Length: 314
Image (cartoon, rainbow, N blue to C red; front, side, top):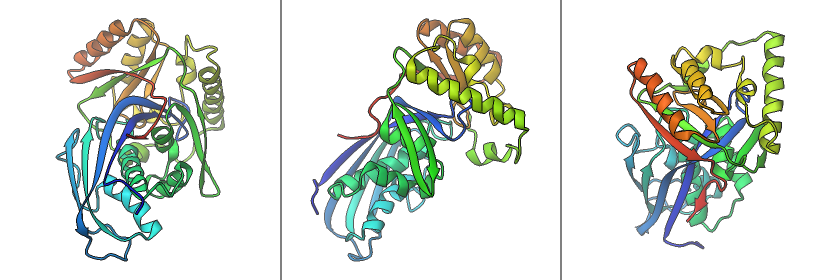
């Protein structure tokens, strides 16, 4: 095995959709989980199976008490995808994970866990897979690439699938824009957030979101029109149906816009709200806090520059 005995990986949070870009647009954010993978002495119990049967995992930080320690852990699942597909001999492994990305809040915690485990295992085995190959393997677990791609590649990304493979473009993050993220103390489960979406939408609503997606991509890619992205971050595909889970969404968007924010939308399926800003960041943070206070809902507000690197082996 061409590897070091200790691998460290840092993976960023992500915000997806950005309003109209449902299941295809994403941004990497400078909030990180750290995954450390160490080889322990001795062989695993089944050296030819390609199954990680003797693995320890220790998790600290966000959601640590809620996350499974066995096969259901997404860090282990990400690592197993690499290990099993390559058919490598088993080793006794130890994962130590420091979580800073809130769980179940729409900041890509699941994608970060999968990417962290897969990238660590890939590095341990000598990097036999490219990042594109990792993406295609992980797609079978995550199903949508809108969080996977920015987590692995960083920046502003457009992602989809074609013939069962991930197709994406990565663009440099828009200059001068930071994300101000409101993190409520409640979760929105992705399964429930998808269950409220209609099976069909009117033709005019599809055109509404399609046109705004195209204009938003153009603005973020060129920097032209980035002083007011709010009209371009409206949609009719998911936010109107999901806002019942996050009743303070519209008031937060209005308050942030009044203080000079340039855009905002529900982060993924929620519960986080992602505001894009260039200036008056302190005032925007305070305004968001005041809105949540009127709802009697605790909130943590984070100011996060856009991450340009994506997941890295440190």
